[in-house]
Image (cartoon, rainbow, N blue to C red; front, side, top):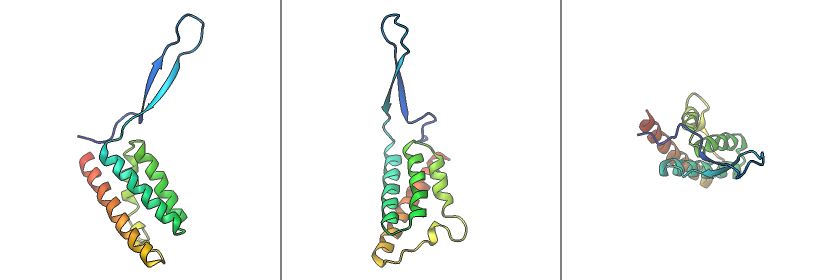
Length: 125
């Protein structure tokens, strides 16, 4: 069973105004609860982005932020984009940070995010 929803991440409830006053129907948008695995992956991506940004790797952090937003919106394309970052030379897997402790944290966070993405990809496929 897929963890991703084919619809947008919010459910829209229609509320019709009473009477015939000619007012348009109002819309209330309620947030949808994410599947726990998707929520965990989105949180991991957020941690990864914060680490990269703190270490001055802004281009990578910006890419992760875009992916994180897609995942948080239950958009499977975010998983695909994250996995694509590991392909080819000079990919995300080759990124190192100058600070030794930060680089160790990056390796750990990146490995956890990759494992989550691969698990989601297997379940989706």
